Image (cartoon, rainbow, N blue to C red; front, side):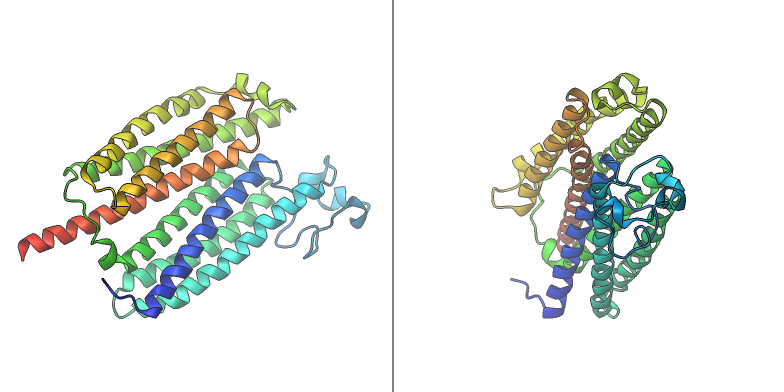
Length: 329
């Protein structure tokens, strides 16, 4: 049994909490976009010039359409959308504080593993840039490419945090037994991760196509959007089968090679559950007229899939390095 110092345990707990918070922010941000609440607050960092957003139109100046011409020139105030966007911002601020706490605690690694501290420092600056990018998204009246950049950076932040936390637990995680897995397992896992990122990129482009359709045609019924989807939508839909087969093979090998009590095997089961959920959410968007709740769920599950793949890969590499080192002694 490997003893864990209080400082290391504290870093692991705060870092893990921060990762879950970032995933929650991804879900909230996707909900903001799917619900059309991105311009719920037309200014930044205030919301209609206030720290606490209004709850009804009477609390706004009579000429607020002119004051906030970008986003509200031809739109009436919607309290639900305003508060949805405001909650998104509050969650972002909370994550900023958690990131700062993670960075502060990571100072303990300056003498033992500077990479962990540098990762946390990079995440701290990335979150600051993410906040500026959020402001740019609002100022641009929700330009699709800025929204895409905002989401890609969120994935990078999660990956860096996850690697820092796992690296801090390297000795413990390397003890997992992976000797029964084939040598090509790591390479196929990298391919699966690449496919997931491609699928996410295609999905973002599909979402941008939906935004364009909405802007041009102003469809009120979601089921009408599907007739205007570009070819990339069908490529994205077909790609889900490739992702399923690739990951299915990996999980099958894990279940064959690893014992029932092996926690890495359980991670494989979770991975397949996430993939099944993402596919079902995608099917519901395709066949049920693009339900609003399915869109953020689909993106959230895709983010979790990549995170789980990344975690399994790091654990596999650490275990393999331990076995190679042990065989040479």
